[in-house]
Image 1 (cartoon, protein in one colour):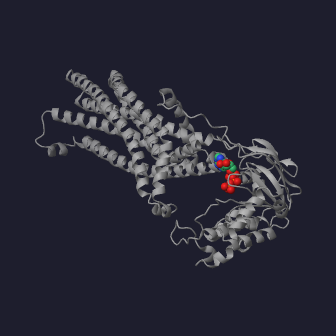
Image 2 (cartoon, protein in one colour; image 1 turned 120 degrees about the vertical axis):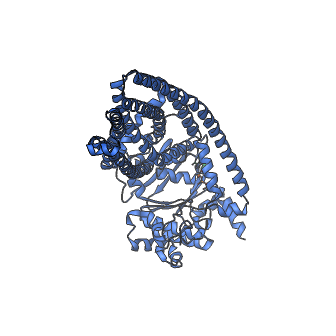
Image 3 (cartoon, protein in one colour; image 1 turned 45 degrees about the horizontal axis):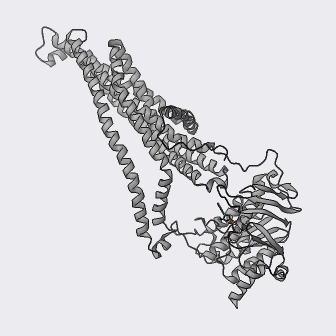
Length: 621
Ligand SMILES: Nc1ncnc2c1ncn2[C@@H]1O[C@H](COP(=O)(O)OP(=O)(O)OP(=O)(O)O)[C@@H](O)[C@H]1O
């Protein structure tokens, strides 16, 4: 993965890095806009109106108070408010109060609508992010998924897709508050500009404090991704359909719960330390802000007494100053929250930067149909990423077109690795693999994979219907029931399906309601049907038959051999009764071909094959 950056150092990110993370806001907002231009525009427009409401309400309040004070100062004073009303002197005041009421109603209404728009937009953004994540993950190499660091990254990115929903609302609120601040500040600037300076001085400590603690909290989260994954894993292992059987018979509950408790206690301790420090410092900084407010208030009162301001001005200024302080405090601390939230976005966009290495070349060769010569492994060597040992090395052999070859060898000999190299799930580190005389890397990758039907020993048990479980072999032919039935019949899964209450439409697996669980061997027959469903030129069965009883495996392989006529086929098995049916047998040991030949030739040779065969045969005597 060439696009992968080195992991950040194990410390809180510094201020510059946090500011740097703000660059993610651009791509994030672009993603929001692309998700729904209409909803985004509506949200912004509504917020613009909402942003101006507070200053308008406060200014109306000032006009009301000034009018009331003027009325009270009038001489002669009418006997009662009714007399005032009758004289028409209260009309202006009435309109003002009505306008204030109108603003309040409008504010409530807009609040609801904005909330609604945000919820819809947020959900769509989360869906878009999840889909982009899945799409991108699909392009990545298998290598990535087998790497723990990558899995941490994927885990962090995955969390971002849902967590960013609240962030979006938060960000938009910041924009709205910023507009409100501008409107209040304009008012204050007209009356007493230096109050704004005082305001800023009072707020800076709180801002710095907040941004520091936000960064600490991010760092804590970031570096705990591996532990969090472990925590999730332990929790899932302790209570899931897949593990319940073994956990019960081994009595593992106590062990798992203890492990969870230990891990979560460490989490809690870290969080508590940070929360305590944050609360302490936050309290002190808020006190500084409050002191600033009362200083300003005293000044405004003083100037009012001097006659520079009216009573209405006093309420407007004091109100503006108080709201400004709240808003600015919110914005400044919010800014640092935004910056640290942007750090989280970093995880998401960093994930999008990870690029696959196993790709089609620019001018790919099409997969040959039919394959004329076959595959040739030329001194192939491969080491799994991070591993010291070579999984295969100096591996040379040919796989002729139209031939059925069996691979045998002890555990860890490199059989599955060979299949992974053949399907370009990995590329060799040494040597090369040829197909019809050209390097495998020159062919179109999708075409190559489409031309190979492979079933691994750890094939996936999809909690889908029986039909879909077979259709995954060629998902584009999902609607082709005849093809599905043909595949099922070839792999002997037809008898399994006949016993299902709903036949092909039966949901299988235990995860969902009405799911029908199959036995290990039944699952294998379904999985093998996928290989036939694929109708590919190359068929590979990597030991998906271990759970079949001896007769079933024999029949499956006999059928496999028969149906592989004209195809190139590889079968891997530890059962010699099956292996001996192959045209040619390759004996793998320590990542290379030790010997090869027909069953009879290898027995006559008296090497490892004969030894293993004898061992197995002796077991049956
Ligand atoms: N994903 C992986 N990451 C690192 N090492 C691996 C990985 N998969 C296999 N290996 C190592 O590569 C070697 C060959 O493994 P491989 O799975 O090819 O053996 P195999 O012949 O298929 O064995 P088995 O009969 O047990 O299925 C082993 O030593 C194994 O430890």
